[in-house]
Structure formats: C-alpha cells, structure tokens
Amino acid sequence: MVALDFLRDELVEFLGVGGLLELIRSGDYAALATWKGLTSALAPLVPLLLLIEVATAMFKRRFIEEAYGLTFLIYLANRAIGHLISIAAVGFCIGLLQPLAPFRVGFTWYGWIYGYLVWEFSHFVYHFFAHKVRLLWCLHSTHHAPRSMNLMVSNAHFFLEAPYADVVRTSICMLAGLDPLLLFAIMFIDGIWGAFIHVGEGLFRRGRVRALELLVLAPLHHRVHHARNPLYMDTNFCNLLNVWDRLFGTYQNARADIAIEYGITRPMNPNSFVDVYFGEFAALWRDFCAAPGLRNKLLYLVMPPGWSHDGKHKTAAAARREYLQNTAEA
Ligand SMILES: [Zn+2]
Ligand SMILES: [Zn+2]
Image 1 (cartoon, rainbow, N blue to C red):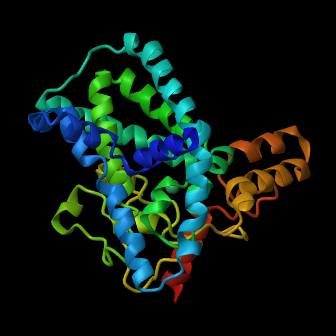
Image 2 (image 1 turned 30 degrees about the horizontal axis):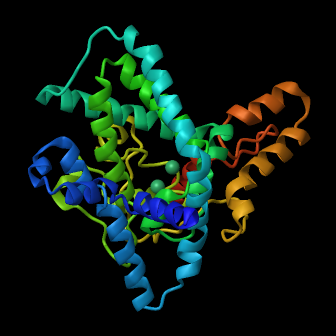
C-alpha cells in the first residue's frame, strides 16, 4: 500500500493536479478568483499538453521511446534530490540577500513590469553563462542532448542545474528589491511558459506567436536555441520576454533555408543515460588531464566549450563567425 501511495503522489506531482484536486474536494470554487486557486487550475496545463503530444505521436506511430524514454528517466533521477537542494538554495539566497536591497518592489502594476524585466535578466545571466563556461555547460548540456523537441525535454536537466540556476536568479532578484512573493508568482508563470516553449512540431508545427514575438519568445525561437547549426548555437537565451536577447545581440530568427538540427556538437550517444548525463564531465576531465600546466587546466574549466589551449578553438562563436564568413564569400 505504501508503494501505491508513493506512486499516486508522484503521479499527482508530475501532472501538477494536487492543488486542483484539493479545490474540487473542498468544493470552494470561489477560490479560483484567488492567486492560489488560479495557480492550482493552471498548473496541470503543460502536463496535459504533454499527454496530448505523446498521444498524437502514438497515433501517428512516431518513435515514442527514442523521443521520450530518456528524458523521462532523467526526470525521475532529478525528482530524487534536485528539488530539495533547489528549494534550500532559494531560501538561503532570500535570507542572505534580501536585507541588502536598497528598496522593495511588490504586487503593483509597475512591480510586475519591473519584476519581470529583472527576472528575465537574471534568467539571461544564468543561461548565458551555462553556455559560455565549460564547467557550467556540464550541468546544462543534458538539456541540449535530445535530438528531437517535445514537452518532455523541459524536464531533462542535470540535477545540479536547478540549484545553480536558482542561486543566480534568486540572488539577482533579491538584490534588485523584488518581494519574494512576487518572485514566486513570476517563477510560476515563467515555469509554465518555460515548459510550453518545448512543445514539439507534432503538436504545434510552426511554433509561432505572431505579433507577440515583438516581445515574447516563441517556441520556434527556443527550437533555434536547441539547434546545433553554426548560425543558431548560443542564441535566444531568454524564456518569456525576448528583450535581453534583442538588447545583447543574441536574438536569432529561424531561417527558412536552415532546417533545425537538434542536439549538441560533441560526438555522443543520445540514447545513453550515462553519456547524456555525465558525458560532458568526462570530456572536460580528459581535456583537463591532457592540458599542459596548471593555468591551461584551470582555463578549461572556465573558458567556453570548444576552447583549446593550442588556439584551435571550436567554440560556438568561432563556428558562427566561420559560417558567416563563408556565406559572405559565397
Ligand atoms: Zn540552453
Ligand atoms: Zn530548452
């Protein structure tokens, strides 16, 4: 019975229906007008879309196991410890840094705008360095390993990535004066959108949100972010608002003549849990050991993926430069 209870609790957590079930049980539907009621009703949205996406793929007889199997395994592995560390890290940053903020911004109309801009900036910072610092890329590369896009990919992360992301984002938001409750509200909205932008072509072929794209990052642009084509790598770091990508010059539209190739450039087995989860650490360790001198060894930890002590860099920036040069000459 204990095992059954455990499975039921895990299923409720995965589907995000805990709050909704509680609401139905209480029969107090007026609570839907409150923030808690609203979040309870919205939480199952993406899990529901994921089920529809899987059902659609099954109906069309696509390769379910390859697209969803490993990411689901990663989700289960992370459930074990990742969340607990992350919650502790957020609490620690709030306690430590909130008193240092010069002012406090709460639930006002300008608070939402300011809060979202600060949050999106903090997300940009975490995500940018996850791509540009080799050691941090070891944490983030698990998310980029899948060779196709679907909603389950949003659950595919190395278990230490969430604590890293949350420490960076919470610290910046606390120092910028965000009320922790406003931060949690923004995190909730961002969590839904952040999962939705992984919707696959099977369910939402074009992945565009049209006029909103002036401000909002569409699923198509996140598909570009997951691509390993030279022009697309290391672009579109934002989550919901694309403002910081536009400002820092990392915004990249999908081009009709360049089909997205999902995955990472390192030769790897995308169906091996060990390779997807630890492969990047192993590659870094090999470079670290082979590098001459302590300075070079340390540089491998902090320089971008693809950096080489012999100057023959294969970074995303170098690949993009080379691609743009070649197309300009052609
Ligand atoms: Zn990324
Ligand atoms: Zn993603």
